[in-house]
Image 1: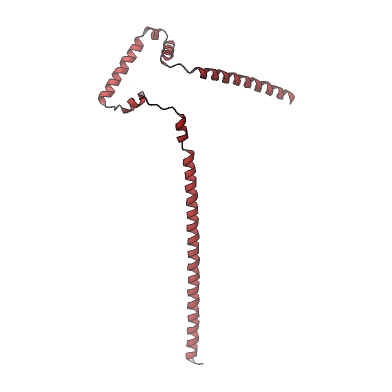
Image 2: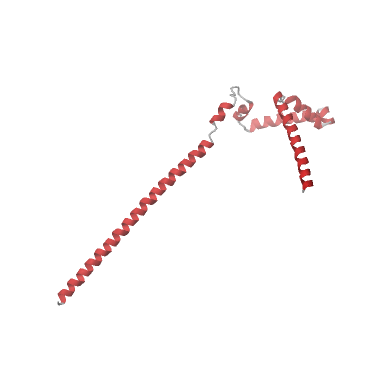
Length: 164
């Protein structure tokens, strides 16, 4: 076996080691590809979950069902005219003058000078629309029920403290 035999043996070992290294690299790349594929699948699943949760939230914020219950307001309201009004220097001056005149008229009013609170109360009673008749009955019934419940709670708590 001479020198050539040793060279061949070394070459065979190098060939085996290079093949072994190549196999290791291929196995590693295969594992990396599998990991990337599973991660992309997980991302897709999580994106679907997020999309579903967003859709659920949007459904919960959907108020179109309430729109049917609300009355239609075809007549233009004062709020819409106030919103359309552009405030520039002249319009502000006009508003300030009108409000100033209104304030002077209120301060010069003899009923306001005598008793300001009653004058304000009378003004509010005159200008505010009366409440619907059914609401007052409901409110009074609710307040009576609350009073009864409070009395029951007070009596029951006092008897419990006596028993202990």
